[in-house]
Amino acid sequence: MQAEIAIVGAGFSGAVIARELAEAGIACAVFDQRPHVAGNCHTERCPDTGVMVHVYGPHIFHTGDAEVWALVNAYGRFRPYRHQVRATVRGAVYSMPVNLHTINQFFGRTLRPDEARAFIAARAHAGEGAAASFEDQALRMIGPELYEAFFRGYTRKQWGLEPAALPAAILRRLPLRFDYNDNYFAHPHQGIPEDGYTAIVERILDHPRIDLRLDTGFAPAQAGAFAHVFWSGPLDAWFGHDAGRLGYRTLDFERFTARGDWQGCAVMNYPDPDVPYTRITEHKHFAPWEDHAATVCYRERSRDCGPDDIPYYPIRLVDEKAMLAQYAERARALSGVSFVGRLGTYRYLDMDVTIREALDTARLFLRSRRDGTPMPAFAVAPV
Image 1 (spheres, helix red, strand yellow):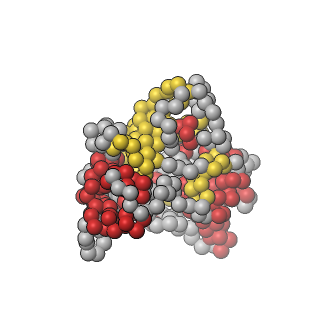
Image 2: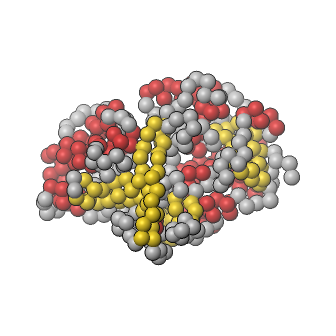
């Protein structure tokens, strides 16, 4: 069957778009330069320990979108999982995100919720208008003591920048709680697939009208052979980075194995500035329904992303936003190509949002075909 549509990237974005179009009767070719599907969500069993490893770092599925939750459960069994993070700070272990237990333990108090609110408010910096930076937001939110202990060092290691140079929006994603709830996420639907994310994506792509081409890159010059291209690669890569490279942070993982249980939890953060890594992840704790005699851990370090590195987190500072606006304007002038996913739109996206936007993009494409209207370059604008 001759493929009519090219989809570049076999992660959740590309897989969901391909499935929606295939079920509408449209043949698709899905290209991915890696030897596996699922992108950075790729999971695989460690042959030595049997542990399901999140190869590119941990991914926890959480959503309030009922349709997205139903979709992923249609392709695999999700087991209940509540993400609980710990932090080793100045020789003590605390629960994250900052909650009533963290506050009482750190300050040596036994505060009730209303007392803790007043206690933190008395330490928080006053401010008018919107916070100007991550540091400003943190000082207004939790005060200098908790900021210095839990956020300043970790943020410098994660982003390679002073928190005063980072946007406040980065911190707004993290909750501050005045009860003992240490669930990292608040969404009603949370879990991890029993067989891993790769198996889910493989099942989504298992359709006779989908031609999966792994270990196969796709160049923009090939676009003319297809009626439309959905590009989930980096936006600037479509243009050969001719106006510069959009900034990303990448991650390095130092993998090690051990007998027994290494740290007793899935994620241990290390905010102290003299610790070179940001966190250690212990992968068997992402599947608490399994039992393994040995364990697989990753020490995780963040650094600037080079041309040959895997991009993880878009930086989106002033220079990147200006460059992004140029690339987005050029993309909108194109026809026959749509940019999707976290790389195609240069945005940090959780898995559920990625799937939601892929569904909406595929449906917009089918509607545009039916109505004879142009398909936009972006179903969701990057700027």
